[in-house]
Length: 119
Image (cartoon, rainbow, N blue to C red; front, side, top):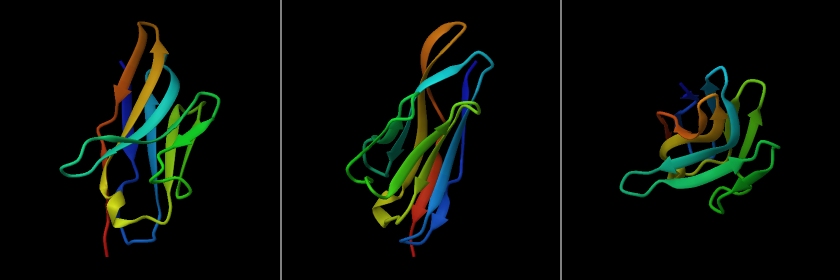
């Protein structure tokens, strides 16, 4: 069984920063690509950033230069450092991970964490 537990969301003023974390559990689970998605009210879920097992990051154009994704492979954890936040960054942020375990390959989602950017 694989679970993804997210933390770090909250309310922040425009221009502020937040750091999201997503920890994967599961003794035999080996994460491959780790991603962050977000979904704003009335909009489709969109990919924000992802990082390979080797640490190579990719960003959506809307967050390039403001957000930074990183991972700790030993802790099976992915982070999203969000700087210079804007009201349009308000959304529920979801962690998504591809990985392998004893039972095979799978894709897993976290429960989501709310990020609200407002003055």
